[in-house]
Length: 364
Image (cartoon, rainbow, N blue to C red):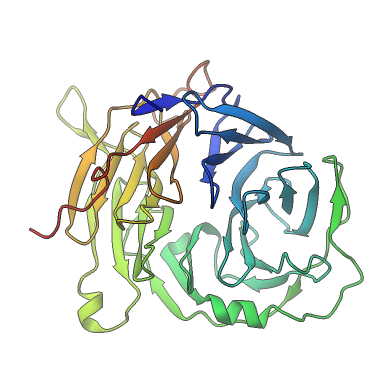
C-alpha cells in the first residue's frame, strides 16, 4: 500500500450508512441504502470487493462479532440479522416494530444490542440463537449508540442520554423463557416470522441530558472506558466523562466545528455525521456535512489535523483494529439542497496513517 490514501473500487450505488473494520484483519463491511452489505479486502491498494449480501430494505448499520466471519446487520426491514460472511447465510435474531438505526456487539459480554425507532433496545445472545431477545423500553427515539468494555451509551431524541452497565444488561437478558418461535435461518432475503422479544426492565446506570442544544447525530465511546463524545446537526461536538464526581463533570466541554464561511463571510453550519475513536491513541475523528474529516485530541482540547475536502458529505468514519488505517465513507448529505445521488459521489477511501498522525499533541 504505497499511497497514503486510495479509493475502493466497486462502491455501493446509493448512500452509505455505516462502515466497520474486522476485529483481526483489514476486511471492511459497508452498509448502504441500496439494500446491500459489501465486504471488501482493503489490504491491497484499490481494495477488492469480496462479496455482496442482499437485504430486503436499506441497511442502516452493520458490525462484526467475535471474529472476521460473523457479522450483524439491521435496517428498514425492522429485522436484526446474523450474517455468516463465508456462506452468506442470514439468521433473523429478532424484529422491531420500526426501522432499526444502530447495533453494536460487545465481545467482552458476547451480547448484541440493537436500537430502533420504535423506542426500544433488543438485547441478543448470539451464542444461543434459540433464546429470545430481551426488549427494553426507551423514553424516546434513539439516534446513535456506542459501547466500551463495560458501558453502553444511547443518545436519543429530546436530548436524553442513557448509560447502561453491560454486565447488568447481559445478566438480565440471559435465561429468558422460550416464546415458541426461534431464530430463522435463510440463504435468501425472503420474509420469515421473527422471534418475539421479551420485555424486561433494566435501570440505566446514569441518565443524562445532552450538552448539545440540537439533535444528536452520533455518539462514540473512548477506548479507555473513561467517557464519550457526541455530535449534533449544529456543527458541534461535546466530550464528557463517565465519572459522576463534580471534578470529573467539570471537565466536560463542547466546541464548534465543521463550519465554512460563505461568499458573504457568514458561517454555514454543517452536521457532524460521524465520530470514531482511535483504538490506540484515544484521539478521535469527526466527519461532517462540509466534506471534511478532522482528528481531535479530546483531552488536550486541540485539533490535530484536518484532511483535504471530499467531494460530498462524510457519512461514516472507522479506524482499523490496530489503528493503522482510517476508512472514510462519503455520500450526498443534501446540505446543498439538491436531491438525488449523482454518479461518483458515493465512495469509500482508505487512509494509511503515519506513526504519529493520530497521536495527541498533549495539553497546552
